[in-house]
Length: 120
Image 1: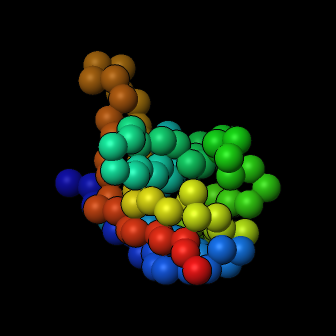
Image 2 (image 1 turned 90 degrees about the horizontal axis):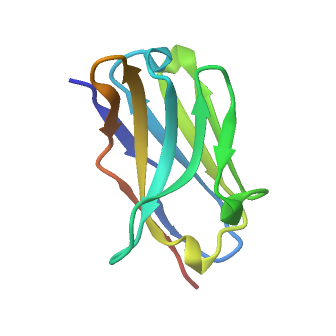
C-alpha cells in the first residue's frame, strides 16, 4: 500500500513562507503525476500544483508566482514552497500521487494532510 507522509505545515504570518514535504513509500517515478491539493471546511478539495513524470507543471492561478512545486526523485519526496502567504491560503494541504492503469483508470493516493494557517 502506498503511503504519503506530509510535513512542514504550521502557523505563519501574512507574507511569510513555508515548505511542505511529502515523502512517499515507493519511488515517485512510478506515478504519472504528483501534486498538492488543499481544502477548507465546506469547500471541495482543489488542486494547488502538480508535476508529471515528464516534468510538466500545472498550478492554480491563485498561487502562480508564489508557490513552487518540486521533487527529489532520489529521496522519493515532493515539495511545495509557499511564499508570500495570504490568509486565504489557510487550509489543509494534501499530497497526492496518481497513476493510470488501462483497466482501472486513474488510481489516486493521498497523504493525511498538513494544516497551514496564515494569520497575524
